[in-house]
Length: 344
Length: 74
Image (cartoon, rainbow over all chains, first blue to last red; front, top):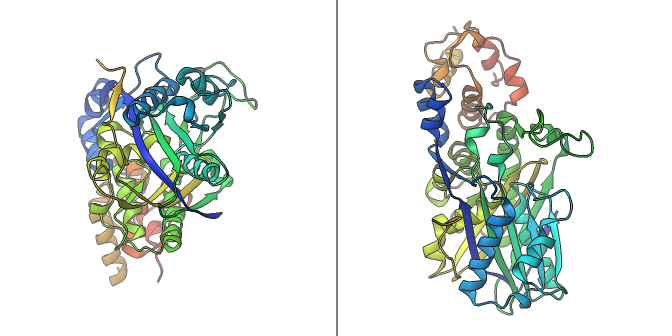
């Protein structure tokens, strides 16, 4: 699906991360993995550290912290928010949804429209698109919260998947405006690849208690890499074409931060040099799933975005299998620093 | 060994550390570092050096290095 929407802007981005620092090499050594093998993987994939949520801290908590900081920085009255969209695959409960819980925590109006989107690494693009649609049809101000705590959903014994994920929650304020340029979107889905990223049990098909065998996230990294190389470049080329940009005229390509190896390989196939494609975040914070694109914007472009506009192409890709690409101009905007939660 | 095979083998071995010192008849499963990382590196090599998309399923069905190179166009 292609979509172009105008007179909408992103006016603030805030990201809160997990507070516990995990070191890839130290954790690997403690798990009995051969030091040479650890070094080989760390160097090739770009794994160094990640920030995970402390026990008991959920995606809802991380997104609430990011949203509160956003509202404070922007001096926005919470009752002026028309809609709240919560993007996550790690909600507090099967029912009710996180958006309803966050509406109460933030003190938003009862008249607010609040709903969740069950998407992972493509989810921030989905949330941004839904917010832009709402702003095109009556809403003045929409809050998009996107985050995940996948470190709590991976098997500590799964040495291929467990060391990858960090935890984070983001908040993005989308507003209707009379003067900004358009946002362009392309979405795609290939459910035939769904088994490549899956938590097999715990849903209605195979209900089991959380933490039981099979309730962990399973990921086939090679299949996901194939998928990313196949689907992301045409989606990025598509939104660049919709925006009238090229890799030379766009300022940044912000990809979902799977890991440095994947981001670099996909950026190369998209025709972007590494210098235009942020990829340092993931070595420090881990794969933050649906929060990784806003986190990369804050981490790599935050200081620039506070001063000047940037032409951004972005693409999220992952569980589903699902992908979403966007092209938009953002800035100058308020970008509070990325902070851990809870803060010490 | 045909010149193309020698050239392709050398390029593959340069990019995929697990294949260092391998020849066409090397059985992949006997290589100590033939693991999920080696699979990723091989997919990346095919993509960026030859513009050939090899799927994880195709790659996992290869027994020898020769089977890998058979996925390159002649």
